[in-house]
Image (tube, rainbow, N blue to C red):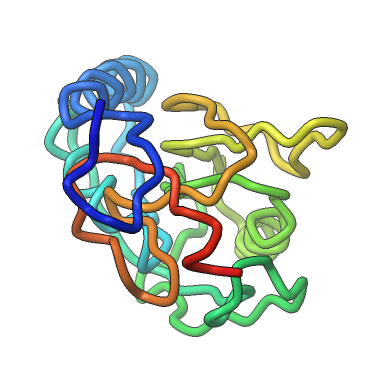
Length: 182
């Protein structure tokens, strides 16, 4: 599959691939939360495209809120320092919380976030990750309950994922050419 963008080395998920993944995940989540009204917590900014599609694929009552955390800045690799930039507006005590993330890499940022939210007394916290990056010799610090698909250890952009705030609007998932970020 070819990209029409000069900075993309190759496309790894087409629009249809993405739609199929979202539909499957929505069905799983709908089944698991049939007796509940989960609070969907979208992690800004990368997960916003995914969460918009995922919510429409979930067939049970739900509520949503947003958090923004920062550990990257404009860098290609995580700095390891986690900051909560935007916190929840919704109390989560006694609630079923489903964190929706665009990509799980090391899991360090997400692990920090889960510990922070656990201190607020939710009934449950689960994670739905659109992508899990497979890095040889490394297991992420978090195991999501719902996984869209695994991707290779490459810099992927599109479908909400960015490099320096660019490429989020690509309707597919592609590998960014190394010369763009090195």
